[in-house]
Image 1 (cartoon, rainbow, N blue to C red):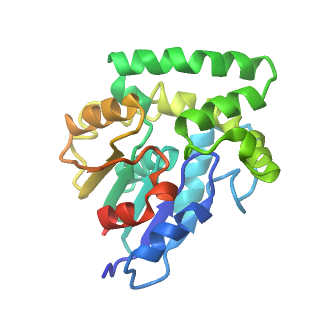
Image 2: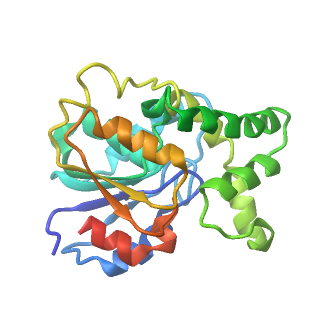
Length: 243
């Protein structure tokens, strides 16, 4: 049974509720903290002024338990969790990162070049004022595999209303604005850290993990048959990896 506090941080365009299935399979000694990132779920809206990663991190830091916790972050939530661990290591006892999308860690690889090629039409459509097309594209690649046209209208609206958060995180994830990859930073991470990846996830995920593993003492677990949204599609397997 997990006896330290557990904090879950969801991916972009999701909300805290995606962890309910995972939590149902985990033996947690106390109620977990399920974070709604800024602009998601029941959290306040992002005003678009200050850097998204800065304000989201500050909000995340504010809800951490007083004692060191097991911090579990997925996708954007994983990248933010890594930043928090590097900047406030005293607040974290254990770190689990589920496919953290710190794309800069894969820079120079073919997977990263393919990722940029894939993302170009998204950016073009978004800059033209089209929100639905990039949302369709994003969820097809990074979602749970559900057909967009079969999603309930409120769910499609929720995703589309938040699609601006994806390009807003570019400086953090693509250009490493916070210098998570700066000289010696990953090498100095002393918190026990596990990377979790699905075998069917986009190739860029494996390249990111490779970049992180090559510069740290992190370990990796692979969930067979899972893709990026394994918190929804493979909750039992993910819970076992997080135990």
